[in-house]
Image (cartoon, rainbow, N blue to C red; front, top):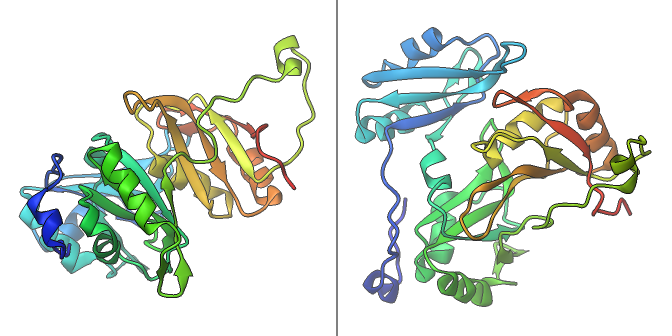
Length: 291
């Protein structure tokens, strides 16, 4: 990752430092890939401690990604450079550092939208480096393609606000950036419909946003996004809602698609399926208009 270019930022570094990790996320796996297959392949570039291909608890089917841990962070970094983009079982691997430790570190999150599809983490850091974030991350799909937005983390709300004031509307490679506090769609729990309270089944008006409940407390945005990517269409966003005070999950999330038709298809396919060993409930979000 590129170093900060702003001298003032270097004089006042972030108080939060992201630790290096020896664990890698390996995505875009062929459905038939086993942990043993992947271990043998990853061991060609370093000392592998463990490999865990993730699978659905209800069917045992692979989720198409795995966590691979090397003996040291340095070996993991070398493996990333050697394996990312290389074909394994006829599919190019998406290899990056596992971010579960970062997701638990909190901080003030800033959403950066309308990024060019080619934007890398290094470029995002160059854009925001003068404001001293402790982490930047361009969000990608399981196969490594950009989702067109990124998250920049700051150790204080004040630094985040300065970055927003300075960068909102900034034109980067011909695209006007949307920069704001990361508070996807809504930060309040939708009220239960009166019909639901009375036990009467309500006819739902289709929207392009799904309300997903009964999430495991440890489920992340990536877990939610990958699960809903199985329905045939890739979501435009997936966000586990969190308490602002402590950063903990509220146990529900919102998933947005391009069209109500895509959202409806996902709802029909994924309602009552297992995500992180819990059966999720999926319905259209009542707070979002379909117009």
